[in-house]
Length: 215
Image 1: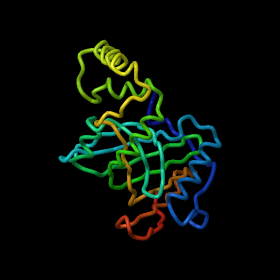
Image 2: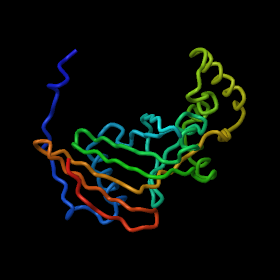
Image 3: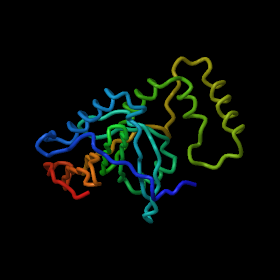
């Protein structure tokens, strides 16, 4: 095992000044996301999704951003998964995007609501057929006896929908929208004096406040 205390990297690619950012944080996110795409980063839409149980026990995992609009950030999952159950009981979450080659990260905090069923269905049918069948086959986050059990479930789903052009969306699967009340943009800087600009609003219908945070 290497000496972890000696692992470090200096950041010096860019700076982040409040005079050069968009007035609205979703516009600023769109600008940074386009730059991540232009840099051809691998899965720039990968994000850490952190949720918490009612007793405040946290859990986190990587999911994929699948859309963004004036409502917020979209992702899809099994409603019966751990994250889905936690969001039912405690509908708040945090997201973190890390774009390491650009020395950037974005942190999002907000409330979470389910997407309208018709939007979830539309996205479900845009997925590869194998992914649609997988949504039927996997009791996500539940204990299973073996890999074979999952493969048996997949074979059963394939047989059930083999003669159907359109696979129905499972009622336990769909989308969520993270509606931000706080979005922080982080840019690595030399000497660990990183730039941190945070947009914050006390309520979803309130105006955004922009402030600089100490690194």
